[in-house]
Image (cartoon, rainbow, N blue to C red; front, side, top):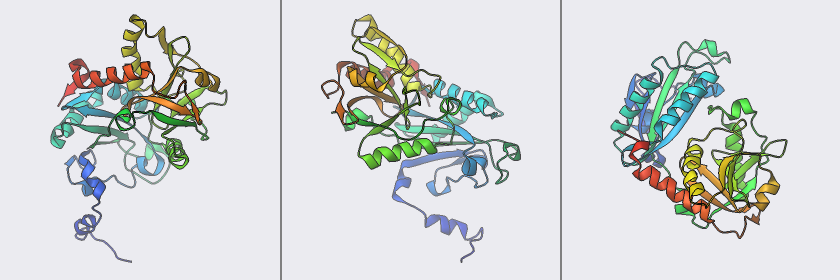
Length: 321
């Protein structure tokens, strides 16, 4: 077995270059104390509890036309998630904002995604969080995905997930222990559908692998699951704000939260999915049965256009870098 020394390491790293590295633009590491732009240098210490325990939190937002969209709600959710697991960055939210905008400027991309990871930090391979002497911050800027309906305008196919839903305490925290989410995405790929969605033991809808779900009822009410059991999606909340315009003009009767059963889904006029990369997705089939007439409905189409316009044209929702 070859022993790789510090002098051998650059050559060994060079051999790991892969095609997907083209999508990685820049990374800040508090461990290194700076930013790297070479993808093979974008490394996390193995003894960071983030790696071997999933002990950390993260958040991701998109950038369009050199503007970070909806950045502040993402930062606030990051800080709230961190506080819930006893984690705090010494510089607080202002320092994280400053560093993130700095990495975006170094990445120098008009369109991209930015992920902020606040980790417990290096210190041991044990389970106790107190073995890490200080938290670590990693910020990576990488290629963003395209909105779902641009790729598949006929709408999405969805099935009910078999993965047990997270306990509310963990579902409402955007933590780095994403194994249930990974398994949900695996289901979707293995079953040949676009997304899966969970239902709790009481039979109420929860969320997808990385998405929020909702329905438009026969009474024209836009409803998302109760927030006590799901992650408070920043895109979902912004879509709900925008949807109030549809209430004003009579296209919707109301917007709010509620318990959603499979029967409710079967009877829905529309089933919608929202997410940072996705925007607003119309569902055409749920468990191989059509939603209404099986084509994207007017509410989903309207909200997808509204969030697209909000991302690209609402200066108040964009932080310029």
